[in-house]
Length: 286
Image 1 (tube, rainbow, N blue to C red):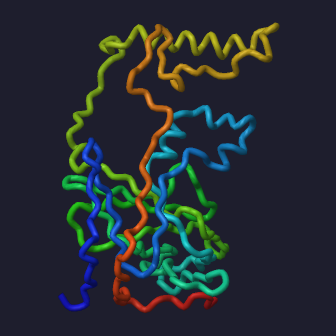
Image 2: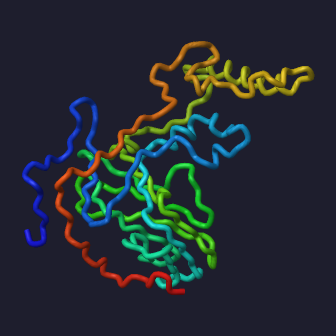
Image 3: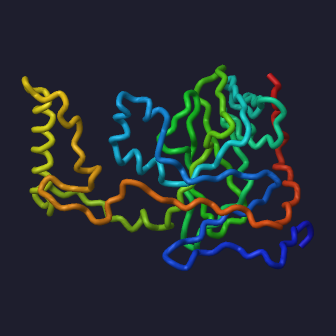
């Protein structure tokens, strides 16, 4: 095929490791390297809270780790004048930018990253492309999309909508600009939502026991003479236990996502990326 890059004869494409693993492949289709890493459990803003109390919330910690981060390669500042046109958004890179992965492509104050990889999931699996979980950016909001990455041969973009006109919004090198989360296609549509009174709940007694223990714990901390050095929070959910006893065997306190393997040695460089068809907004032009 004209323009196709030949691959070394000894280059093997990645597959599942043979156990219950599933392949998640990032084909580099650009000369730009894409840094991908498993999302970490920590967030600076969570650690900065008093006694790091937000880290007691296990659902937040699990969400933090539930996917892989795509890392921004170069620092830039985006400024939107509030208009709808592509030219209403101006992007200025720090120093001499090499790749210009971010641009104004759609207008309406939307910053668009061209992802220099084609992500391939197993048959029947989509890819949720979203902002990094529990990591906000003042003045910008990540837009989410779901891509059928088991068949599509087109790459996707990641987009952030600026929310504050006439403000400099910085996106630093090393920060995540996207989080990718595989999800099996059709699973959501299998659910049959139903409303049922509490009396029909099989775990009604356990729920009532938890409610009583929660009330006693919160009230007990405020009683005169309460031990100030006593427990400051209940750990039942963190430990995967119920007030009536017992532990859920599949309880998770930490995820262990596998990292993307390094690109094989000897892989040929992809050809230059074609023009996206829309002239770019001049970077640094205000």
